Length: 154
Image (cartoon, rainbow, N blue to C red):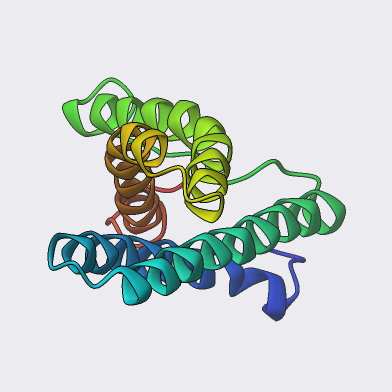
């Protein structure tokens, strides 16, 4: 985007990388707990949480910089009225709604683990995990669709 400093223009790729990394750590953490590797599971899940916090900071920084330097809110996806445009909007809608609840669910899940309240930790983890993975994966998909899909971004 015209007027956006290079450091800010690089943030969408950084954000996608952080989302992808968090998603990988979540899946690795899942495998670790299934293999009863509790300590490694704990560190992996804490790392996924920290990675998601760093993502949120970079995401907010990007959108603030975008507004300050260009006056725009973000990229718009083209292909309106097509199956691709409808698919993008559906992915974006579900991503945004679920992304709003992930910090709450993840915080509760980690808090219950910290308190060693294992029955309640497991009950919320089975809800948190698929939502968090979905948000991480769809974050990468949205980035690819906006920045690398031919003719998609306006």
